[in-house]
Image (cartoon, rainbow over all chains, first blue to last red; front, side, top):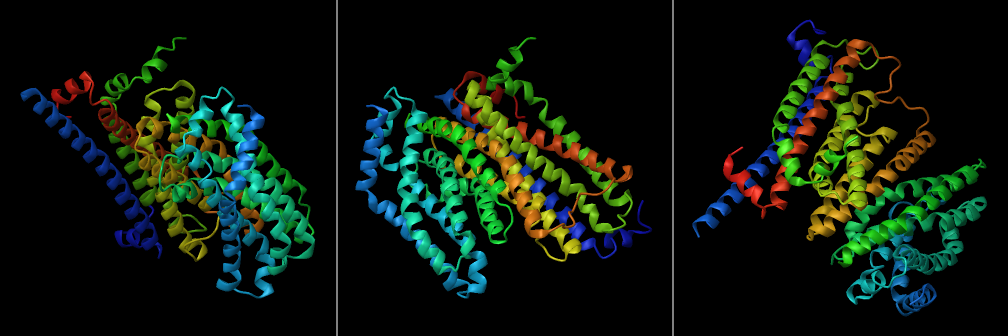
Length: 58
Length: 220
Length: 248
């Protein structure tokens, strides 16, 4: 490890705020796009399934 | 219909709808006036910024003018007539864009001496500015015609055309204003004019085809 | 050489079945790879002698910027494929990937701005690289806006393909002009990422996180394409069978 202890790791020699905010932002963006992709996919599948089931009963 | 009769009617229509061209020019003047009023009227600010102001205003005015380029033809069905006319649609689009360009550029050039004076444009660079306008604006019209054709079926397309086309206009703006600035500093500027010309030639080769594809897709 | 795979690719049905079992492994592998590269880069790579620890932003900034450009390249190429061969899968690809590319550009932009603060002392410098990422982001927004404004699917397909191709042709010119403009106005600035000979323990994690992000984005793209295929083909029989068969 490039750091002596955990405090050093989080502080990153005064640059911690910048580094961690970048990684925070990136994690949130990636999580959001993944979530929207999967939820849209799930939603479409459910809608289609319901429609097909309804068609079958008619 | 022949190419000649097409271009004749184009100019006739432009002449009848001169208010549209006039509006674009008025818009151009207003944008130019905003800078001295909104930022700083002293020649210290205006003289070095004059070419940039004129180019930004030109780009905005052209985007305003170009958005409605196909609108009327689309609603009255003459665009479909062009598609099935048997003539090359790309060539027709090129002719139409040329007509539009002439209609906006010529009055714009006539206003330039006045505006250059009002913005304290340094003396030596006036003719370079004119040259950049003459070889730079055709690219703007050619590229812009693609955006206008893509959004012709939309009622509110003006904002979308701006959003779509402004990034493509950046190289033209950069090369044109840099050429004027180089001329002001007494540096060689012919290379930059050549770059502008290259962008123009590339647009000339590609844009009419793309516009024709977009028109065909929009009229179906 | 057989070209059947190429023609098969054009069929949404074939593509759906082919990609169904591929998306999750790609995405998972991407996540693991990215995480591995990032942990290595953030915790174990040596400190930069000039920038200190703020250089560790590189491990997300550069992959995001590379992905933003690659996605745009892919958009432009598939636009070309659509205009030339009318391949049905191409516009589906464009619609699926454009938002992902926009997110990548945004990530590169935000990380670049935050990196700028400790390096240059301001959040934003009109640096050639940052400016061209900004333009790239605007290009993505244009494509997305056009896609969303056109309700007619056939027209939207064509329109988005046209604008992607025009963008692909223009992007090198825009990049060149921005770089040229930058040297004119800025003089020789200290760019964020250009370093003379980065040591291996610095660039290997960068390579790994880039590969990881590539796979992650590929997985996302496949999922989004599958959703779009289901929407577009919802009348066909195979979609019915597919949807009724399993919950996925």
